[in-house]
Image 1 (cartoon, rainbow, N blue to C red):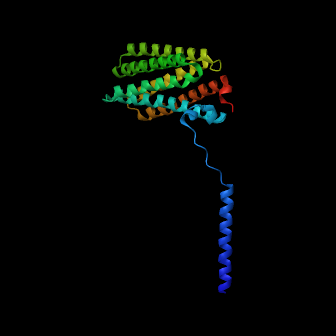
Image 2: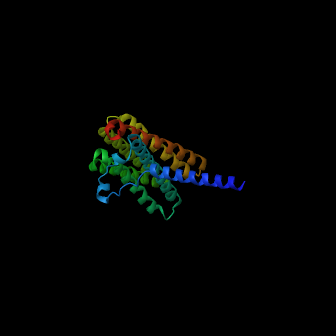
Image 3: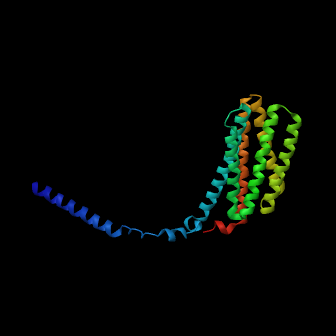
Length: 230
């Protein structure tokens, strides 16, 4: 019996050793170290597949436009309630417009990115006028601000459609005007303390702006197919 146990233990030991030797022989060798200079030369295209670049662009666009709607809501809440953080929230909201402009620079250049940021900053500054006019109840100021807002939306649509034929001007105008409509509903509902309508307008506005973001992403991918191929 004792001899049988010793034999079994010896066989187990030999088996483990053989497995270890086999694993060592088949294990991948450590990658050579790459100098920082060489690493910097590796392009984004080299690190990411075409489909992953599509996903990355869509995710970035959705994040930025989602921030656009979220920080605008924060501004509406702070302004209507007269909170002391309104100016700081406005700063963060304006920064978001610069971020959106920056995301198109790799495709359309620095000047185009700056132009979009400028138009979007105008959109936000006029939105502030709309909120303040609605809060004070001055209908003339409200109408004037809304007229400027609509023109700004059409200017944004004209700029974008001029940059990409896959972004039809009329379709963009309709989507941007709908965005203004949801924002106006949100402001009005909050002033009336109709919280259910306020939340509903925000939810619809958020889904709408994410759809708008997807339209922009799809247009870029279609216009620059070579950027998204392996």
